Image (cartoon, rainbow, N blue to C red; front, side):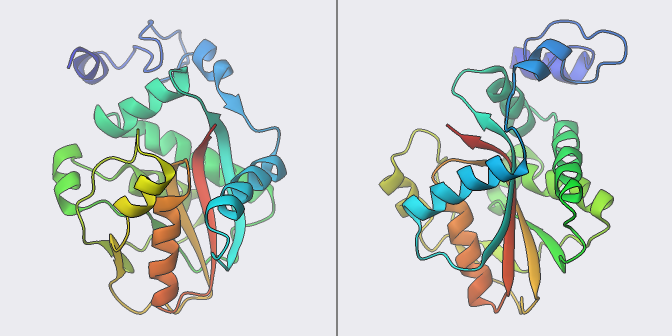
Length: 228
């Protein structure tokens, strides 16, 4: 509760370490930002994420391009920032990360091929709890730069699931089984799916399967970080 009040009423406090921000800094201080374990480049990020899917979901087909900004480590500064974004109402952090993802994607010469951008949906009750879907905030910020439409009507989260954090890979898979369903015709050639943190890939894989069931073509994935 104290952290939430700090971020709401004192936006000049760093969300990672709670120190006062210097002139020109916004939301994240330079020291925290420098501590984030960034991938060397888009190729390294793509390889690491694909390895997660090869290991846990080898039957997932059609995952075209993959992007991730950072490696996510337990109890590091990035975890504090992501926690503030997801649970403490600091939604502007989603805009920051979405912009950086779009810069990575466009820097690879990609983005033009996407028909639309789809955020991983939250259950409506979780949207009420958090007041917003952080993945949608990230997606809309990326879409503004890539000049693409955000579609939240292609897949819905029909099952209220417990948080994935702390669950084993098998429990994560079971937790999201049948959680998503297509809500309409998704017969689009290229879709960019946006998530916040990828750990075992269970949530993203479940959404990909729902999109494929609706007739989606190629699906790419962009995420803030890959949990180490």
